[in-house]
Length: 250
Image (cartoon, rainbow, N blue to C red; front, side, top):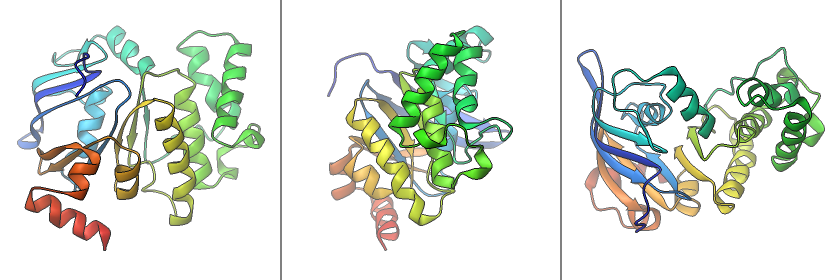
């Protein structure tokens, strides 16, 4: 277990929508270089927990710290949020590409506007990451000309163009046809091998087992089980996780 300061730390984190308490006291931490999978049934709070890490949701109780930024306060300054989102990238289920911009323009937009980098620098990095995700030939294409798997790989490249310290993935393959899932998981696996810190909400148990080093199993807004990925997934202790894995493997 690493003794270094965690890059993401939850301490009794709570999140409610009105009277509905979605997260009921989450305590966990992730360190630099971790690839953590958050698993659980639909509606258990996985995506909400991930969105809290990027300031897309504000928490109602407990503590949350991400790359040294305290997100526990009820009001986070816009400056702190900007600082957070330049260092913590997020890849969503739906690709959120601008349809009127080419692939290259989609990748260059945020670095030029947020990081204030030159057009040449933005272009060079965009082309580098398009090559990394295997889509160099699609730089001039528009989103409507791409398959779902290609759009998601572009979305990953777009996040990488911001030079993030952490990448969050919210079920990145759930909107894809089954035959397109592999091409996205291959890119994510490569990023993991290169040391990118990643937190992945996923139903892909093979990814969780083969690529992640940490797994958190959420059930009804609480952590039922967490720990080393191989240990948790190959030797689950709680009955709910055993039942969940049995359903996922059938």
